[in-house]
Length: 301
Image (tube, rainbow, N blue to C red):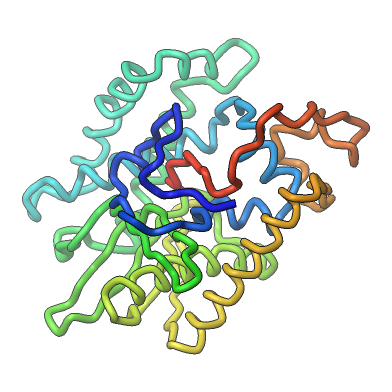
């Protein structure tokens, strides 16, 4: 059940376009922090997203995250003195217009039954304003933004994803930064967020030979930061965990056993009506189920 990374899916994602071909190497599969997290949360959720590739309706919260991430990315294209709250607000409407031009269907979210567009845009401005209470972007010069990263482990499992921001100090110390437009989370959610950051740190360590000095989660929903200092033992444990997740995915693929896991996260699941835990019936598996590593997700979290 191996595939070469050079083999393309019919629907090519930004991750596929920007990834580096692994020439002459049989790759077991590819795993991102998003899909690894899906499987840990609920194997059936992983199946719906990765195997069945079922469409999901956009949510106002997820769309707010996309818009704010893009504004913060573009803010650092400006000269340092221009990176002000007023300038960030000025970027909001044209950035939203550009998103609509690329995906006109997003406008359908703001119907009479849905959220009010004016109020929603105001909430985006509030989130952006809160960012400036946590950092002064005039004093930062990120080394990378929306950085696609990947690393091939010794087991031939390919890890990949997108990092919101990478800061590199003059002494070479690396800080991995991730923006969350929601609020800081309880401890049982926090471990999930830290796993994502450790995943990125593992990829950087394996590709650059440097353990990041800091992992920083920026919660714009309530203006808090979570900072974590990883070490090699952390990243080795993360590597073992990733390998174990992959083996569990392969077993589910071979047996067809994508059992659901009921939790508080079910309240936000797009596929609840199809879940046996909630009285639903999953669709039949596709006639040809590809390698579970044939992922096409953008990994913009």
